[in-house]
Amino acid sequence: MVSKIVKFLNRDLFTMNQAALVLAVFSFLSQVCGLLRDHLLASLVGPSANLDTYYTAFRIPDFVYNSFGVLFSVTVLIPFIAQYVEQEKQDGHSGAFRRFLDSIFSVYMIGMTMLSLLLIIAMPWLTKLVAPGFGGAEHTHLVLYSRIMLLSPFLFGLSSLLSSFAQVQKKFFAFAIAPLLYNAGILIGIVILRPWFGILGVVFGVAIGAVLYFAVQVPTLIKLGKLPRFSFNIDWATIKRVMTLSLPRTLSSSLNNITFIIIGAMASLLAAGSISIFQFSYNIENTPLLIIGVSYAVAAFPAMTRMFAAGEKKELMEVLHRTTRSIFFFCVPASMLMIVLRAHIVRLLLGAGVFSWNDTRLVAASVALFAISIVAQCLELLLVRAFFAIGNTKTPLIINSWSTLVTLGSVAGLLAMYRYNNFFADFLNDLMRIDGTTGSSVVILALGFSIGESINAYALWQSFKKIMPGLKSENAELSRSLSHMIAAGIIAATAAYGTLVLTGGDILQEHFLGVLLQAVIATAVGGAMYGIVLRALQNEDITLFIETVRSRFWKQRPIIVQEEQEL
Image (cartoon, rainbow, N blue to C red; front, side, top):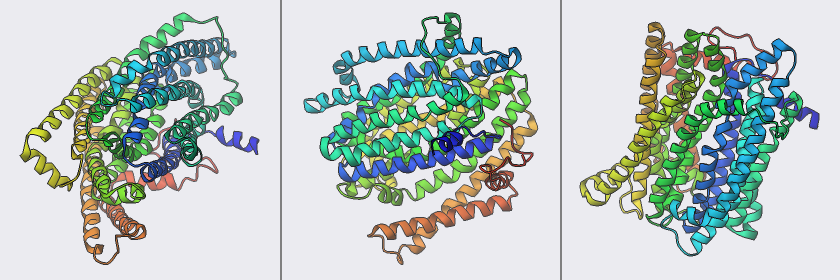
């Protein structure tokens, strides 16, 4: 049994679409666990001060991972590893590679251990910055939860380091399974430990999930013979080169985390439960982001890195355009259908137990406002990796810095308008159907976030086009394909909305099965209409998607169609 699992984790993937599909499948399963996690938290605990404390406890650990952990992340290490792998093939020995691996591992272990100890000591003061609205017992619990959760960035960063070596060898399965196991650990905390320890039991579940996330990476590294060893014989010249390249990436990632910290701090000053409302809606909107955006960005990055190193700039731009089209192909209908079906989605995923109708309306409105920027967020993941593939880490940092200011400025400005401008508040309440709700100002957080992300994605795209201009024919084909998808998405959303109206009187919506049936019918009609319109427009992306699904890559190596790119 163990040997079969190891063999499964060490399977090779041959094309970018295969890798993206595998990552997407396991990401989907992970999101199912994540949505189940949110359902249980919503129904058993509900948006409240207790749940606000739990979600806020992630802020400092997440910042640690996105500041120190990503110094040795996949996006930074893969270009270095690819060079060492090629050198190892030519020289016939792995001495340099082994020293590189051990040096990276040793520096990470020393640095993260020292940083974690300092944060444990400073946690009572740091938590006052991330949650100025918390006091008394809430603050005491926040300090304890945050300290326990520091285990997560330690293991996540180590896992990212280890998975870099596996991905260069086309081993994606362990990396794909890890998030699924992480969410499984949290479910253990909710179902088994929470009845005994309350929210603290859920925090223990987070720690269990982090251990599982790390443990699944180990068998692949053992099989490849690349398991690192701690050593004081560190190659500081290589460490300097890695950190010089990764520092802008680290700062850029930290900026995104700072955005969430400041938005969370603003939410802590709003009505109790606002942080929970924001997090629930972001988690729902984040599902297509993780399934689609991360999957394609991770799958495309090694290919773009190797092409740039080989001087194949034309091929790199072809991969970027093709991946962009794939992202739009999935994200456009996901965004539009999520806006139309937002209330059904929230009722199905969270509507049970102590989760009230007021909570449902606020989360649904926030989901719709988040969904506006789904395409932009997925495209941003790809473009940042495209910049890293060509060795440019400064441009994303500069753009993300300005975008962070735009996002926070948008949130603060819109909150002021919502509070002091009755016309704007009434208009937004009517548009999002949240009249009469308590704590409705929380939806502004989602709107401001979407504005900032959309501007960020546009700026990244325009900057990359200037640095790496593509062929005119490729740009024309990309524009034509995207226009097809947007038109098809609008028609699909209209069809889905029409289906809701037509079936509203015939299907009982007071019960779970009625809501589920109506949502499934509307989604099926919208999805079918999307495919029909694209086929009528002779769009190549839907043809490629069908061929990829039919390849049965898990049994044999498929015949690679012309549209696919070798990893």
